[in-house]
Image 1 (cartoon, rainbow, N blue to C red):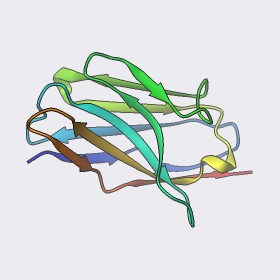
Image 2 (image 1 turned 120 degrees about the horizontal axis):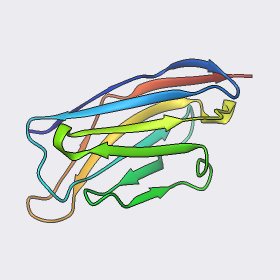
Image 3 (image 1 turned 180 degrees about the vertical axis):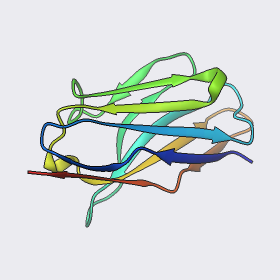
Image 4 (image 1 turned 120 degrees about the vertical axis):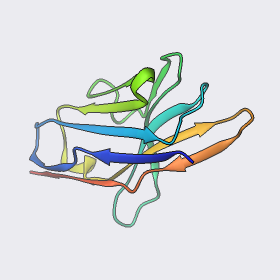
Length: 118
């Protein structure tokens, strides 16, 4: 069974940078999209960025130009480079892996806290 392990969260000041890492263990099948979502206190979980196995990326408007998602298929790893961080980026960030073709699945990581202070 696929498990996702995140690391790299922390606290920074406005304008700072952080890099999140997510490693998938247990054998990640091909054609799996990986991504990052976040949930701030009192708000719904929202998409931050995704990347397909072929390298196609998608970003939320609020992070476009500041965040960069990348992956290494051979290492089953996805990264989220976050630059020019703002207080509104404060949230728990969750790694996600999903496959829309058989075998269909969705898996979430445990989450990592990102705090940006002004």
